[in-house]
Amino acid sequence: MTTIKPIPATQNEGWGFWGTMNEQASAAWPVAMAAVSDATGQPLESVRIFLDSRYGRHFANDVLNQQDAGAGLADAINATTQRWMAWKIGRLTTRDYGIPRGLPYLTGFVIHCVIAEESLCD
Image 1 (cartoon, helix red, strand yellow):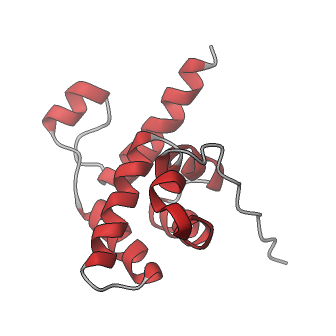
Image 2: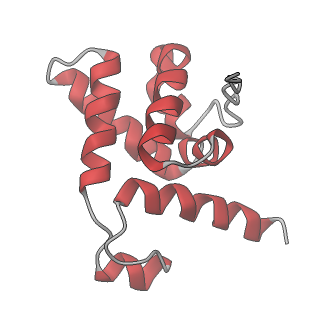
């Protein structure tokens, strides 16, 4: 039996992915949550933290750029997800953020956002 986990709601409607997507946010949110979770193998709550962050805003900007180039919403999210997974963490990002070099960019920043949020709770 497969259980379907509910998509966590944004906790940052004014900024991050949700705020950047504006009127498309409610349609884009579940698609982005699933795409990023599937690509990175990270749990939905971790993806929520990423999308609510400033990196989620950058991710949304990339989605909007894909739409400006003619892609539909789901295709724009999938293309952005694939693009961010194709990028690799480099030396400077490793130095500045401590994310292991060579890790897919999207995976690295999803994990980074979770660690950063947990450190704020200490």
